[in-house]
Image (cartoon, rainbow, N blue to C red):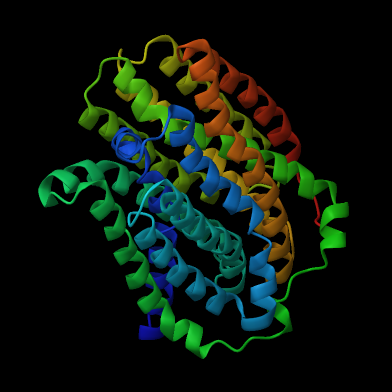
Length: 386
C-alpha cells in the first residue's frame, strides 16, 4: 500500500471515529450538565434533540458543497467545523451549550451525508467491506467516548466543560490526516448531486428513509437516556457508563460483519428483520429487568442496533449507481430520517416526566420498533434506484 493510500484509509477511518463522540459524550455527563447549567430532564434531553435535528436539517448542504468543492474538501470542512463546535459548547451557559452542540451537529450532518459517497467514489470494488469499516468506526467512537469521559473527568479534574472540549482534538487530527486528500482533489461534475426530483419520486428513497429514521430514533433514545435509566434502577454512575459503552462496542462487531454478509445477497430483508428483532429483545430487557443481567441486554441491544444502522447505510450505498446519486439519496434519507429521530429523546424525556417512570416511554419505543421492522422489510428488498 502506498503512502497516499494509507493516508486515505487512515483519514477515512479517523473521520468515521469522529461522527458520534460529540453526541455520545453528552449522555454520561448529562446529570452533571443539567445540574451545572440548570436544565430540567426535558431540557437535558433537548441537547441530543437539538443535535439530531441539525443532523436532519443540514444534511442537504453536503451535496451542494460537494458539487462546488468536491466530496473530499466537504469532509475536511466538516471536521474543522466539528472541532470548533465541540470546543464552543463548554464556554458558557445553556445558550452557548445549545449553540455549540448545534454547530458540531451541523458539521456531523455534512460528514454523514458525504461518507457513503466517498465509499462509492474511493472504494467502488469494496463497498461492503468499507461500509462495515465506516459504520464500525462510527460506533467505536461512540463506545470509546462513553467509556472514557467519566474516568477522564476524574483523572484531569477538568469537569464536564474541559472534558467536552478535549473531544475537539481527534477531529483536528482527522482533518490533518485528510488534508492531503482534500488538497489533491479535483472537483468535477461527478461530485454533484443527482437531481432531487428523481430521488424524491423513487419509492426506494422513502423505504430507506423510513428505515434510517426509525432505527436512528430508537438508537438516540437509548444513547441519551440509557445511563439515566440504569441510575434510576440503582446502578452506580460509572457502571451505567460502562454498560452504554458495552452496547456500543458490540455494535462494532455487528457493523463489521453484517454489511459484508448482507452485501453479497440481492435482498437484505432477512438481515433487517433479524436486526429489528434483536433490538426489540434488548428494549424488553431494559424495560422488564434493567438491573438483572444488564450486560446481556446491552449485548443483544448492541447487536440489533449496530446491524440496523449498518444495513441502512449499506442499502443507501448499494442502490444508486454512482457517487453523486449515493450522495443525493444519502442527503434525503439521512436528513428526513434524522428529523424523525430528533423527536425521540425529547418525547422520551417528556413521557418520563408525565408518567413518573420508564415503563411508558420504553413501551412506546417497542411500538416504534415494530414499525421499523415493517418499513425495513420494504427497504431491504432488491430494487433499482432510478
